[in-house]
Structures are given as structure tokens and as C-alpha cells.
Length: 244
Ligand SMILES: [Zn+2]
Ligand SMILES: [Zn+2]
Image (tube, rainbow, N blue to C red; front, top):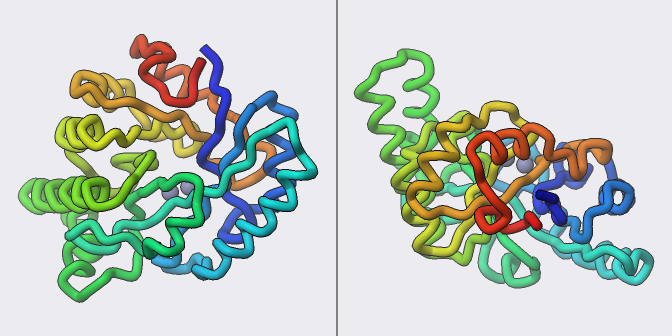
């Protein structure tokens, strides 16, 4: 099984190290047919991505496309869910200039409202600190619902690193992901992914995407850990949208 596309890569537009061109060159070196640039939306606290940067990246990619004709270069994103209603931190007019949309939950975000901040930010932090099973259950339910609403309201291609930092109900999310045609990522970069997660999601009929989450060009196309999990669980190329 071979992965032919890396949809999850960062550059120095957010907190990555390399340029778009360096990620493209690294992808060519690794033999990928498609490279995606997927910066965080502006909702991440501490990451100074501005919405107008997506327009700059679009222009930069159009120039690179004529320079590197042997690889498909795509512009995507890793949007944040910023409300319990599933609102994203990237508006529709910006999503419209992108080639694909990825969405992920991140622990430090600028919430839509005070209520959303309490649910998605404060209670998640509190649940981790006090380790109360009642609160954990509550945040898991809220996190899962916010993601499900996000993929029901928006055309989302991939959910990045489900369950990283913020707990989710894998079976419930996977069922919705299968329904809305959204792939769940097996993230090769964070090292928290388990076989159990993949098994539960597969049983619900979900499809997967393998992503490097590279923050440095040298990690573009580095899928080692994710591929190991996929093999151990017995996934085949039909289960993974970027495998052949
Ligand atoms: Zn992320
Ligand atoms: Zn990422």
C-alpha cells in the first residue's frame, strides 16, 4: 500500500519551518503525486494566521504550479471549530478559494461566544485537570457534537487528528463522518493514534486519510507510524482516500 498524497502540511505562514516551495520539493523527493498546504485558521490562539494569507498562498501556489508540473499542488486548510454549533473560523468566501477543507479541534481557540468558550475551551481544560469522569463525559459529548455539526454544515473533506488533546466519541463521530463523506485522519505526526480508534471507526464504515502533519519540510510524506497502524488493523487501499 502506497500513500500518494499528503494533505496535511504546514509552512511558516503559521508555525511551520519551511516555505510552500520547500514542502513541494520535499514531496517530489518522496515521490508523492499530490501535496496539500493546510494552514490553521485564524481561531488558534498564538498562531498569527490571517485570513488574507489564504489569498497570498493561493497566488504563490498558482506560480509554483507552472514551475513544478510533475506534482499536483493544492491549497487546503486546517480550520478550527469555534462554536458548539459547529461554526468554523474560516468563512465561506475564503473556503471557496481552497481546493479542500480539513477541520480539527484544537485546545486553544478564540471561541465564537462566551458560552462556546466555556464548553470548548474551559471545560476541556478543567476536565483534564480535575479528571472527573462526569465532566469528561460531558466534554466528550460536546466536542463530538461540535465536530458533527461542523461536518454537517460545511463540506469537510478530512477531520484532522480526532481525539488529540480533546476527547471525542469515536464511534459517534465515525458514523457521522461516513454519512457526510468526511474522512478521519490517521495522523502520523502526533504519535497518539491507537489501533483501537481505527478499529472502532472502521466498524462504523468511516474512511480514513493518512497525513504527516509536517511542520518541517523533512517530515512531508513521512507516514511511517500511520501506515503501521493501518497495516496492524488490516485496512486496505479502499479504506484510505489517499492510498493505492
Ligand atoms: Zn492540528
Ligand atoms: Zn496540523
